[in-house]
Structures are given as structure tokens and as C-alpha cells.
Image: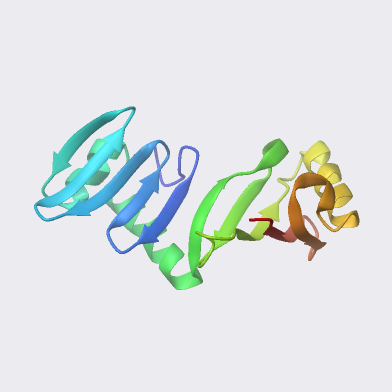
Amino acid sequence: MGSTPASCFCNFNEGNYRWGKAFIRKSDAGYIVEMNGERAHASSLGSAAQLAGVSFGALKHWINLANYFKIYCIQPGTDGAVQILLAGSAWSPYGFRYAPVGNDRTEAALRHYAGQSGVDNSDRKMLVIGDRWFYFEAKR
């Protein structure tokens, strides 16, 4: 799988993560990995990573990045955008959206919503902050 999350990576709190469809949760006896409705026990974070389908090094890399930059989740957003939720987004999501190069439709949609201040797409606020970058605050 390499070092790129399959669909998303979340750093809920120390010992509790999401990698793609797998949820990794710290327990008294190590970790519990939940995926596709099944639960498995792992004695270490390295073993939990393996059960989730990622190398320990890649998982640690993303945990370290998320901790350093105060990221809560990186996930696919609407219309092919990448959504980066910042720490504190568990209750009221906010952060950045990025329209990948070559995805003109996504960029156009995000620019439209930013022009409406996010009102059309259920955001409370949406602003263009860079070339293909947008800041948003979702309604809760």
C-alpha cells in the first residue's frame, strides 16, 4: 500500500487512528483493529498496522505528520477534492480543501462554493486561500 492512505487517515487521539477502512484503537492488551465488521487483536501498533494493511513505518509517518501539523483527518472530499480537517474538527469540521491538478471540475466547483461563501454546499464559510487551496468551516 505504500505510504499514502487508501482513502483516508485520521488521528482521533493518542492510540486511536483510521487507515482507509480500518480503525485502530488502543486497548488494555494492545490494540483492536476493526475492519469490514470484523475485529482483531494486536499486541503492538506495528502488528495493528499490518492488520490494517499498512507498514508500521508508513503509519508512524502519518501519525507524526498529523501530530506536528495538528491534523485530525485527511480524506477524500466532494467531487475529488482532498479534505484536511484540523485538530478540533471532531465536533465542527473545519480545515482545508485542495483541488488536485488536472481536476478542473473539482476546482470549478470549489471556486463556485467559495463565491457563495459555502452556503450552497452546506458549509458555513468557504474561502479561496491559494492556487487550488480553500479554507472551509462546515455547518454543524
